[in-house]
Image 1 (tube, rainbow, N blue to C red):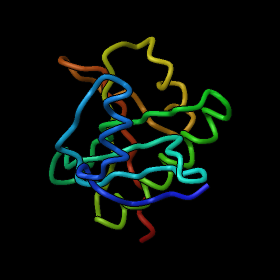
Image 2: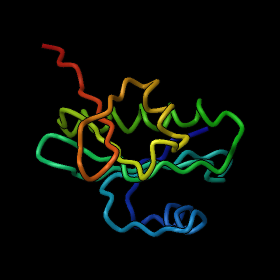
Image 3: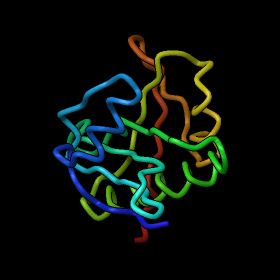
Image 4: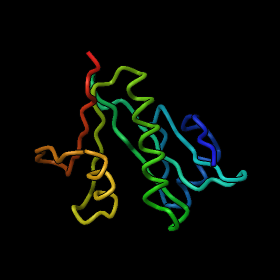
Length: 128
C-alpha cells in the first residue's frame, strides 16, 4: 500500500467523497491510501486556527484492517501537520457514538470542552 499526498482537486478524492455522500472543497492537504491503483482510504485536513489543523475526512473502503488503515492515515496526516508547524490537530464529530472516536482516543486525542460540537484534540509534543 502507498500513501499519496494530494489536494481536494484530485479526482480520486472527489470520487471517494461522493461514494460516502459528501463533497468537500476546502481541505488543503489530502492523503489517499492506494492499493494497486485502488483507493482504499483517504483523510484530509484544513486550517482550523493559527495553531491547529482540523481533520475534515477519514473515509475507508474496507472493513478489513479498518483500525490499522486509520492509524496509518492519521499518523501520516499528523506528521504533515507538524511539518506545517501546527501545534495540534482537532477533529469534530456529530455524535459521541461515532465509531471513529475510539480510534482517535487510542491515538491520544482528548475531548475538549465545546458548547457547539464534540471536539477531540491532540497536542504535539515539543522536542525542545
